[in-house]
Image 1 (cartoon, rainbow over the protein chains, first blue to last red):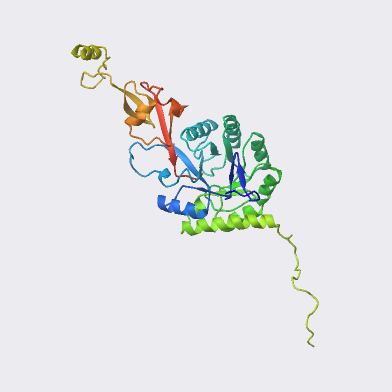
Image 2 (tube, rainbow over the protein chains, first blue to last red):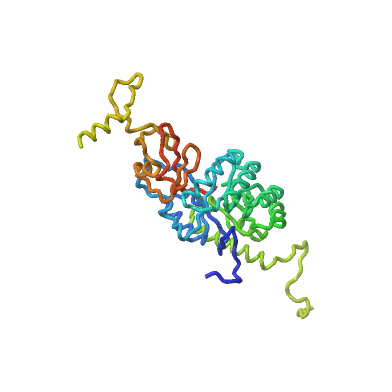
Length: 263
Length: 97
C-alpha cells in the first residue's frame, strides 16, 4: 500500500501517512469519539492508562470503539509527576499490549501542565534502555529538545501552548530552531486551538501535530476533525512547496507592459 | 474420602478473632489485599491470573503491578498473591494529555 515516494512520517520502526495524531479524551460519547477519529484520518491515537474500575464490569470500554488492529495506539503518561511514575506507567501500557510507543509526559505543575524537563529526560533515558519508542512531550526549548534527541527519543514533541489552552503556537521561532537542529521528527503537541494553528505548525516544517481538546471540545467535533485533517495536509503541502519570501511593498503579479492608453 | 477431607481441613490455618468484633471461627481461605487502592478479600493462594478471573475482568488490554513492580503477562499464572499485597490493575482509558 505504501508507495516509495509517499511523504511518510517515521516513528521508530513504523511509518505513517497521516501526520495528525489525535487524543481520545473529553468527547461527549464513545460514538462521537470514534467517528471524529475516523474523520480526522489519524492513524495514531493516544490513550491514557488508568486503574480499572472494578465496580464497572460489563460497561463499554474504550477499546470497544478503537480497533487496535486498525489504529496504532499511543499510550501516554498524562498525570505522571515523576520519572518513576511515568516509567512504571509506560511499562504497564506495554504489558497491557497497547504498544511500545509512549507519549512520555512528566508534568511539573498542575496549573500549567508544563513538563518537568529534568524528570522527562531521566524517564526518556530509562525507557529508551527498555526498548521503547519514546515520544516526549516537552517545552518549546531547543536545548531540551536536543538533550531528548541525544537521549534516544524517537521524536520531540514541543508544546505550542499549554495543554487544552487552544492558544496556538506561542513561540514559532523556537519551534523553528528546534526543527532546524533536530534529526528526529518534530511533532507539535498541545495548545492547538483551530485549523489555522495546525496549518501554521506544518508550514513551519513540523513533521506532525498532536491534538485532543481542539477536536473533542469543538461544537461539532466531527467537522473540526476533518478541518484538522485538511489543515495538516495543507500546511504540509505548503511547506514542501516552499513559500514566497515576505516583502513590505507590493510587487505586481500582472505585466506592467501592454496597458491601454486613455488620455 | 472423608478422612482425606477432614485431614486436609485440619491442616488449614484459622483466622484469630479480630479485636472488637464478635468471635467467629473462620478458616483462612481469604486474605486482605489492596486492589487499586481499595481493601479487598482475595482467595488464599491465588495467582495473579486467578485473581483477574475472580474479579471477572477482561484482561486483553489490562496490566498488573504487584507492590509497584510490573508483572509480565506470561507470569500471571505463576505469581502468587500474598496477604497485604498492593495490586494495581490498569487499562487504556480516554485521554489525550
